[in-house]
Image: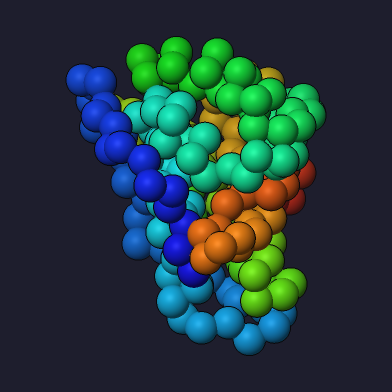
Length: 190
């Protein structure tokens, strides 16, 4: 399952290196049977999303979307179609290059709905750009992390879902929901 468009490589601006996601466990795979190469392609796709986000590369990020995609941001803003997603991304992503906080992305679960359509659950963890410390660890083991959530909104992790569709052998986001984790039990457990 190829997941790239033919696009020129984009150079990152000079900034501290973003933390890499630790070696993630193999994602849980459900649904119709899929070859390992499709699973590997999805993991690589999410790694490219992480790279684009961490390095504030709008073109690289947008390359992963279908023209008719639907995207819902972590704060509930619905974006419909690549032009709308592009306008939003080009406004909010570039300023993130200088942020002291970034995020890592790891594929947690892949549900192959059909051989050419997969729903992908991602674990998105906020991390310090310098040093790579995971900011969400402050919630782990807390019986009631609500006060910490209010004091440290930058430490709240995300749990995006991407619906990837393969057209002409290329996999792109058809729909996505980027949700912040506010569930106390999930935050406390890590």
